[in-house]
Amino acid sequence: MESTGSGNELGAFLRAMRERLSPEAAGLPSVGTRRTPGLRRQEVAQLAAVSIDWYIRLEQGRVGTPGASVLDALSEALRLSDAERAHLHLIARGAQPPARRTVQPPASLLAILDGMPSLPAYLSDFRLDVLARNTAAAALFGPDFGPGVNVARLTLLDPGIRATQLDWERVARETVGNLRRNLARHPDDPRLRQVIDGLRSESEEFATWWDDHTVQDRSHGSKRIRHPEFGDLTVCYDNLTSPDGADHGITVLTPADEASAAVLRAVLTDHANRLGGTRLRPVAG
Image 1 (spheres, rainbow, N blue to C red):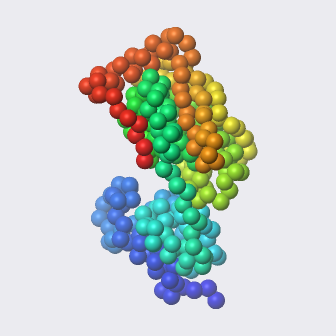
Image 2 (cartoon, rainbow, N blue to C red; image 1 turned 60 degrees about the vertical axis):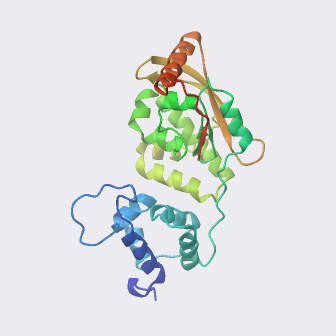
Image 3 (cartoon, one colour; image 1 turned 135 degrees about the vertical axis):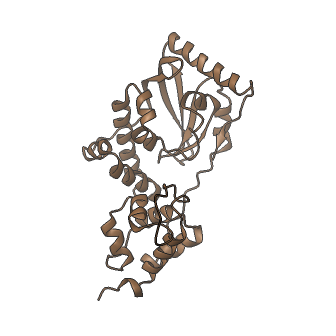
């Protein structure tokens, strides 16, 4: 017989973790008065990109053994510590969680970013999480672009980025194909699964394009960008892959013509003036 919520250790742990977490701490708006503390079940399901019905049954002990990627999505949603994440995996599936891959960028790659101050460049991993960026990238894409940002989520979900990307549909579809290619190489990576599952639930375009099984390698190409103050420019992008097997890559943007180079110079000059002429080193997570 399946266990009920009252006698289910996993359910009790999940309830305790969500009841201690405020909506503000989880990045959600707090609307109205709550009769009980913490997050609601539907909010946890939303943050973890799982269905509310499945999550309710999970708390009640009425589902089978959850996969590691789903448990890691719940761990992220509930802001669990490393010890709490390990405990969640042990009580849910009787095994330690998969080892987290290090995201610390190699010093040599940061030095490369620092050495190209006039070209926007950023370092990312196979999940398309940004690990570091140089000042030129912040000038072109805005100060919020940097560690903690996922390029796929930014491209598919941010309306501001969508408005500035004049070739948005092509670039977005390339991004979807790139994620599918990376998933074949890293099928058990929980963070990559979380990114993909989240986009499938939040973006109709992503879900449609994911289901057409397009596979692409976004190592080189060009795109047009509309800067809100200085106008349009066309840039080429090249992805320089790290040879160490860590699947880090530096994406470098170069102006495609002299008119675009003039726009980029204006963007960088304006950004430097706003910073008082200070040259910043690369920002890394």
